[in-house]
Length: 399
Image (cartoon, rainbow, N blue to C red):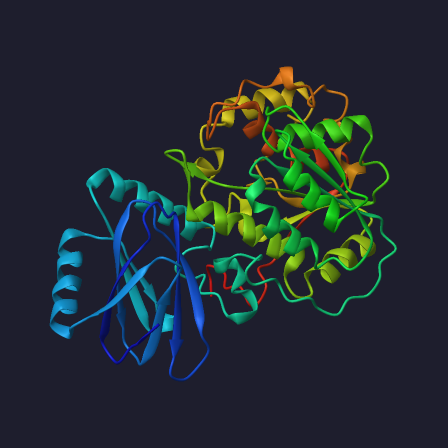
């Protein structure tokens, strides 16, 4: 940990092979905050402070303080060369990311753009109650809040293709004090993870399923077989990662944790979810507002993202095409009434044969079309949609 001063500069080198770099700012006065930066292919990060503060980085990172002259020269060079620079007003700082070549800088800018569109970029400086978003919920578990009992029968369906994130998910589920049924699907046998799941939730159902249709198909297979019929509402979550060049990115970490925080783990969030479903019997689905697109930041063109033809074709086959309007929760994590998904049942959408072999595609597959049709199915069944606003501890794009 290094002590800073006004107009102090620091050079931070991420550990080799890392994809996400947590940076922590501790001002002499005021609240500490943490940001998770993308670090895939980043050679180093230049931090410029405008007030006394201490700066630290994640495990394995090298933090060195530069002289004022060297820091100013580096800042000017970065501006001239067009290196991505993120202002962090709440930390009275800015960070500049340096990548090795033009192609890597282009990929980095794309990651930063998507983070910003979802409100997960430079504005997501996490305060202490939400620092697990940057550091991981297994490292800093979400804080439990006071809760009243509900009469609703709760279920959680978690798809774990990436089993290493079970600790994050388990820490989030620990924020649910009511009894709930847990169903976990894996894409390959993993006795160690199965044992960990059973140790935490002895009554959980753990099933190994074909690696087809990602998180969408296993959920629809459970819907088809009636496994969700015993629940009033179900939370659908999964081990979301965004893979680039065979490696995960910071986007995936923040996307998954933000969805878990907004759906389950944020202080008071579960009470809000239960109260809204109890008060409105026509509410069919609740999802995180930051991932509901299109919106004022995420254009219709970007929301389609190459999936328009496939989605409209499938909507027609499922009888959802009349008055179809694109409106969905990117990432397919939400609370839903199983009774609101009747139009997705009985269409053999749980059959692995309905999906192309997994090839790492980011768009254009059947599962990407279905991601955009959950909400249409809910509305077609006569139910409404609702959004869960980012909690006060987690800044939104507008903050």
